[in-house]
Amino acid sequence: MLKKLLAGLGKRPEGQTGITPAEPVDHKGFRIIACPEPQNGQFRVSGLIQQPLADGSVREYRFDRSDMLPAREACDAMMVSKARRFIDETGDAMFGTEAQGATADGESEGQ
Image (cartoon, one colour):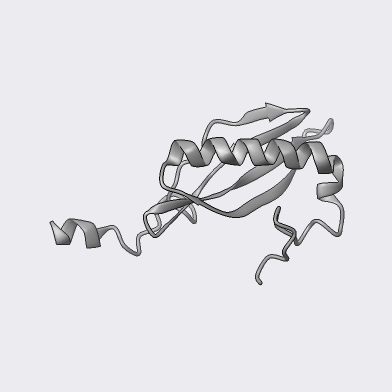
């Protein structure tokens, strides 16, 4: 039994987190994609906010929060809720030069 528990440690299949992204949710012309990061048996609220443009390109903003939840479904729901509020408050400004290196918490990435 212990062998099964330890076997999954250190593995990172499917991209960086090993978690399949949730189905996208549309909100005011933006696409919200929850992709929580597993950490210590819980899930960290994170994902992407995308904005499809008329020329076919897509602007993307990495949305990371410090919130941790024990269930994937609850984490996905919180991501969508927080992302909707962030979109309502920030709109296109999230893609400005000041927002490029910041997380949704307002902290610079890598700190």
